[in-house]
Length: 205
Ligand code: ADP
Ligand code: 5GP
Figure 1 (cartoon, rainbow, N blue to C red):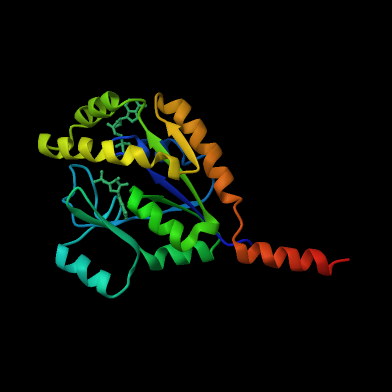
Figure 2 (figure 1 turned 45 degrees about the horizontal axis):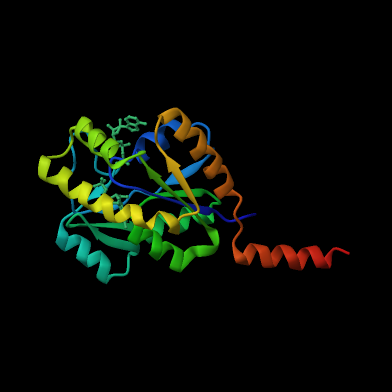
């Protein structure tokens, strides 16, 4: 059986990543969404264990020391990280594992699991549109919004590191494109699986 594959989604906070994953979830088949751990405070409506695992800085730093993260990064002054264990399990079960992580996290995942990774950068059409959406979401203080916009100006420059760019102009069109990318990501074979396939292909003559 083919082992699982990874789909990394990055893009500025407010780009529409959660909106698009939710809109596509019925169409992309079984997947495991990697729930990150963070030291940032929950937003109104966010649930521990569903949106993130919300932890203290001390607890996060213990997990770093214990080697529990596949990758972690500091974003907007808080820690965010992906725990290794559930990702490994989902991959063993052959699932598509979706990450919503920043550009630093993408680089680290590429360094460790390049062969099974597909990536897409999701962004609103303009900086102005991003700003409007962050304000309309009204989940963050003004100072947080300003920080996110400043961060976005840096992140957009990494767009060329990704396999695909999805411009989220309308949710409908962006979701259609995302579904295509997710289906393609699922077909990506690991180097190990490819080698096995070639061996069997040659043996069956
Ligand atoms: P992210 O998960 O990337 O931080 P969200 O999915 O929370 O972003 O989207 C940010 C805000 O923008 C939300 O209020 C969402 O409803 C809104 N939004 C998402 N996509 C669009 C779009 N295509 N047009 C207008 N608003 C959008
Ligand atoms: P937010 O605070 O809006 O939920 O997320 C802020 C940023 O952190 C987003 O760019 C998001 O993709 C990123 N992020 C969320 N979880 C992780 C993670 O586990 N690792 C890394 N590297 N970035 C993450």
